[in-house]
Image 1: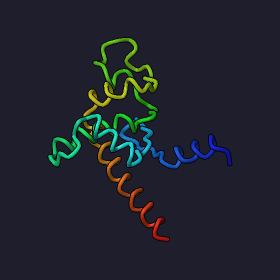
Image 2: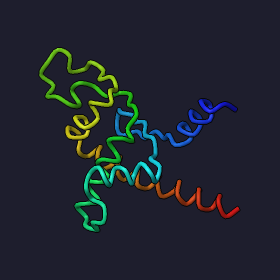
Image 3: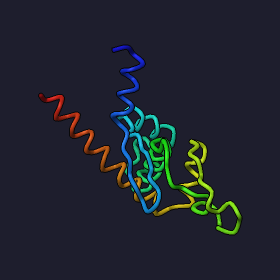
Length: 130
């Protein structure tokens, strides 16, 4: 197996989908290293407060969302335009805007992400013991 194929398969193994209402979000679970980088980037290294955790999880979530289906312009903007039902294509730069417009989705996705990260860590640890 060549390096490109290995890397592609490793990324795909960390991908999960989660549906909230009409929208399916695709997430890529971060590695421990990616979480550490996010902690440094957000300045929460060594802080044990709830607020620090929320800041870190938001940063990690913004990087983890790698796609969506079913999102419409009306999900992000007031539905007063003729393009309200137009699909909103995924763009990495739009992730923060979408999460700000849909705080319930942001919280649900952060919860799913934390749960799936813990499951993956446990699976990796169990695999390392075998």
